[in-house]
Picture 1 (tube, rainbow, N blue to C red):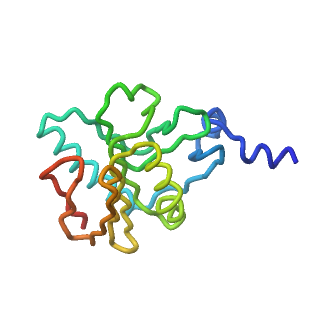
Picture 2 (tube, rainbow, N blue to C red):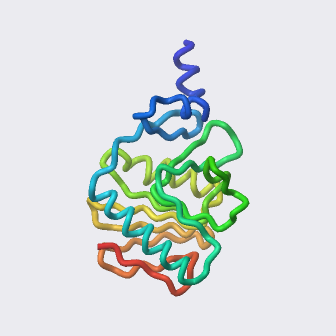
Length: 177
């Protein structure tokens, strides 16, 4: 019985106490271990983060681009700790040396074989309810990008190679190859 209670009762302290070679996220007190990313995953991560950061810098924007591993404490509790692939945070008061405290404005997750259910379902719900404005699911296997613009309550799908408009930045679009 004790093991069952512990399974549903992990906290952020448990994440910080993991061995250095283990990465995990914590959602509603449950630990989800993460596998190392693939080369394709990392190439997409670099492409997107570079394009977004360049755009923000060129526009003299206030937002900050953060890439995993970067801690997002989505809720004001000790049972949720997420490391989105890319987090764009426009409210600097949410940021400190530990990470982001509250919802980023824009989150991008790059799907890996082991993260499908997490990215398409679990995180979708968590991001939406926490107040993320825009959520992109980039799926290299399907060569698709699914975009949720929670403020407008819309969902759109794009194929790799298409210009994908960024909802939080009017006039900015990104092409994923």
